[in-house]
Image (cartoon, rainbow, N blue to C red; front, side, top):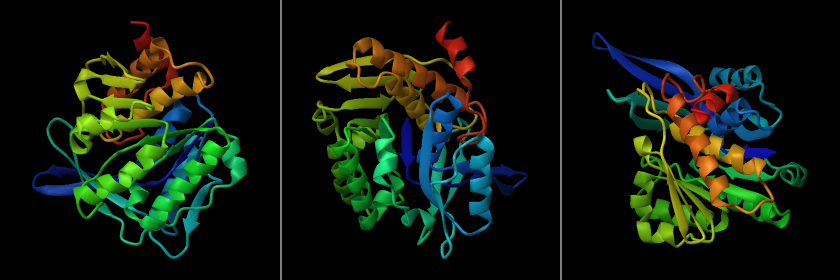
Amino acid sequence: MLICIGEILADMIGEEKNGITTYERKAGGAPFNVACALKKFGADVKFVGSVGDDLIGKFLIKYAADFGMDTEYIHRCEDRNTTLAFVELNEEGERSFCFYRKNTADYCMPAVSDELIKSADIVSVGSLMLADDTCVEYALDIIRRAHSFGKTVAFDVNYRTDIFRDKESAVRTYKKILAAADIVKFSEDEVETFTEEYVDSLSNKLVLITLGKDGSEWRYEGKRGKVPTITVKPVDTTGAGDAFFAGALSILNNNVGKPLTEEILNESLRFGNIAGALNTTGRGAIDHLPDLDTIKTYLNI
């Protein structure tokens, strides 16, 4: 079983027609995206996060329930609004973000019990909350407890420039979590942000790097492997990295307790690549996730 902990929010995806920009509301938030993708891929998964006591929060809780997610661990903050992310797309479907999250619900994370952590094999921690010092300690406490129970901790960098005061403070904060996690994911751009030298220094961890149309790469114990992806025509790349991460984690979760062989690592990235690519063929981070049978069809090509 997997637990995803972090932000749940509404992605407001913009589109301009005839000089007028309209925004379509979609469920989002990287850890919630990962949890929904894991559910779609057949994994046993729980999501822990917070929404506001407002119409967006009610929409998200209903969305999670309709998706088949257990909503028990989605906390409703009575005195806060739900976080929003405004997203604009270019002609290639690539995104630009603007977050509305001053004193919003994702700063108010619910407690995670020892019993819940003990029930998991992999605990995946989100990054948006790292802009708040209290939430950094919250994340580190969860990681410490997960390790004390012998659990694997996963972390997706998912760096957003408008969340932190500056790159230097963000990198310092992220490195606290990166030092503690067991599985870490970077985009190609994030490797440049943190430097190749630093990423190579994480040789005692499983490092996953997304490379866009070129697929992805794993690095582990001084070895590395690059896995190609399929070719698609992207409409919206929102959530592509989350679908990839969920795909890779689903395979790794199926192999918990086994040595991480090159065969397992290549399989996890191939699954993740297909999931991430197919997820870009429609708008939104979750609504166009492929199901397990569709991914298996591409795996057998």
